[in-house]
Every structure is written in structure tokens, then in C-alpha cells.
Image 1 (cartoon, rainbow, N blue to C red):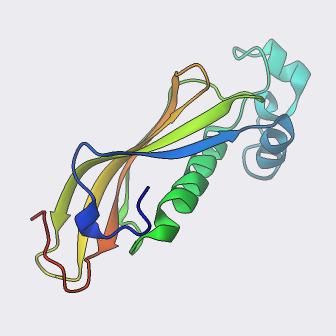
Image 2 (image 1 turned 90 degrees about the vertical axis):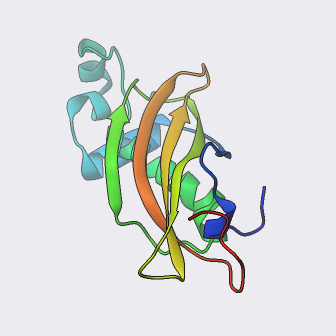
Image 3 (image 1 turned 180 degrees about the horizontal axis):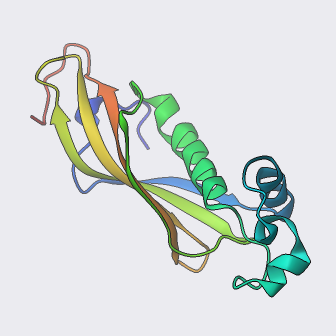
Length: 156
């Protein structure tokens, strides 16, 4: 993987593997207790009686884990200038204790800024797969990245 990422390093179709993370029931319950205290996130009995048949992670917990992996695996090693927002989040399958998530950052589009030549916008889809290869969550959005100092843009 690259040492440091500038806007010019992103290309449509690119897939960056950000590694894996295994989810524990303790962290599912702790997140839910603080931010999404629905019974199927907190209580084994209630969760078993639910449509999920057991405790599952909050979708927001899944997004938070993905964000951490994107920051650790890419953003903290890039000229990231933040994000103007997200276009969509989809929770496609429950995340359960013991699941191992593998997150990918897929570049879908790039555009150099015409009004601010020091940056560009990168559109991406983050994809989380479980250990069975099932897509459990997708996040579509955009990020601003600084241009390579003194470098020529490959994208425009």
C-alpha cells in the first residue's frame, strides 16, 4: 500500500483493501447502550425473539467501525481535507458478535477543483464484507484531498 495519498493517486475503479476487524458482543452492547439502545442490540433474550434471532450491531456501530478502518488505513496517511457529506448508507445484512469485517475503499469518480486548485474531490463507496463474503454495509460519499505539491494532476 502507498505511504501517502494525494488527490492525484486516486483513480476511478481503484479498490483499496483496508484490512479486517472482528466484532465482539461486548463492543456491540457498549455502543448500543450509549447510542442505539434498541433491545435487539442490548438484550440476548429480546434479540433471540426478534426477527434477527440474536444480538446484532447497530448499523451506526457498523458505520463507525468502517470509519475507523478508513481513517487508520487511508485518511491518516493522506492529504485528506475532510468530507462535504455522504450520499447514501445501506445496511444489507446484520453484523453479529464474532463476525470479521473486511472493508474496501472503492474510488468511483475524481474531479479536480476549478475554484480551489490546491484540492480535488474523490467520490467513493466503502464496502464492508463479513467473513462469508457477504456485503453487510455500503457507504457512498465524497472526500476532499489536497493536490500533490508541485505535481501535475492526472485527473481533471
